[in-house]
Length: 388
Image 1 (cartoon, one colour):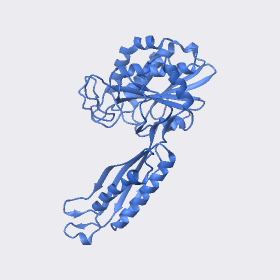
Image 2 (cartoon, helix red, strand yellow):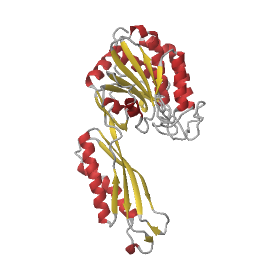
Image 3 (cartoon, one colour):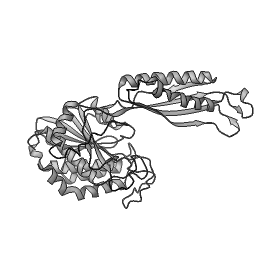
Image 4 (cartoon, one colour):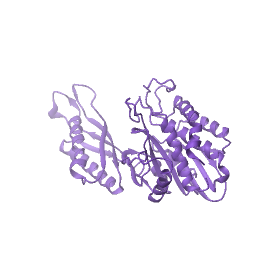
C-alpha cells in the first residue's frame, strides 16, 4: 500500500465529506443524523457495521483470525453558534462542529475507503469506532459498556488542533492530555438589605475570596515541577444590586497528569472552600464527583512503533514534538482497558490568517489536516499488519 498515493487520490472527496458533516452538527447523544450519514457511507463501501445505542456506529474490516485493533473518531458537535461565514456553515442554529470532529469522521471514513481495497491482506480485524458524546466524556464508556472493545488488542485515534501548524503531526509516548475534573461549590450565607451588611453573611464577598484562595493551590501548594490547572469558570451570586447575596455558586475544573496530583488538589479544594466559607461566616457544600476520565497516556511501545512507521511518510520537521496539553479527552477511558495511542494533527493555517482555537465560534482548519489525519490512520494500521 502506497500511503501517499492512496490518500492523494481521495483528498477532494475527503474535503467534500468533511463539509457535508460540518453542515449538520449534533450535540452529544443526539447525533442521529450524523450516525445515519456515517452508515450511508459505510454502506457505499460495503463495510458491515453495528449501531451503538443511542447513537454512533462501529464498522468492521477484515474477518481473519489474528490481531484486532480499533480506529476511533468522535462524532459530536458543540452547542456553539457558528460565526465562520463559510459556505458550508452549520445549518443547525446554535450548534457547530467547533472541535474538528467533522474532520475526524471524514478522515476515518477516508482511511476505511482505502483499507477496504486491501481487506484480504489484513491478518485480523479493524474496528472503526464512530463514537458519540466525546464532548461530555460519555461516549467511550458507552462503547466499552456495549462490548465493542472486547477482544481488541489496541486502539488508535487522532485529533485536529488549529493552534498546531498544518504541516505538523505528533506521535509521542507518555502523558499527552489531562485528566478532567469538575467541581461545584455552593456557599450559603444570610441575605438582607445592602445597607445593613452587619446583619447579613455576604456570599458574594466569600465567593470572591474563595476564587482568589483557590489560585494559591497552583502557585503556592503544588510542587512547581508538577503540571496542573485549577480554573473557576462560573460564579453566580445575588439577585439585585441592593440585596446582599445569601447564596453563591462556583463551578470549575481541574486538569492534571497524575492520579496523585489529582487527588491532592481535590483535598485542597475541599479544605480551602470549607475554611474560606467559615472565615466569612458562611457554609460550603462541595460537589466533586469522580474524574470524567483519567489523563491520556500513550503506550510507549506502540507510540515508538507508529513513530518509526511514520518516518517513512513524514519528514522529520513534520513529526513535531508538540508538548502535552491540558485539554481532556475520553479516549483515555479506552486506555484504561487496553493500550493505545492518540496522535495530534495540525490544522492551523500558515498563510498569516487568524487561527481560532477549538471550541470558538470561528473555529476552522486547513483542509490539508484531513490528508495528514488519514495518513496517520494508515501508518498505524501498517505498523500492525506488515503485509499491507
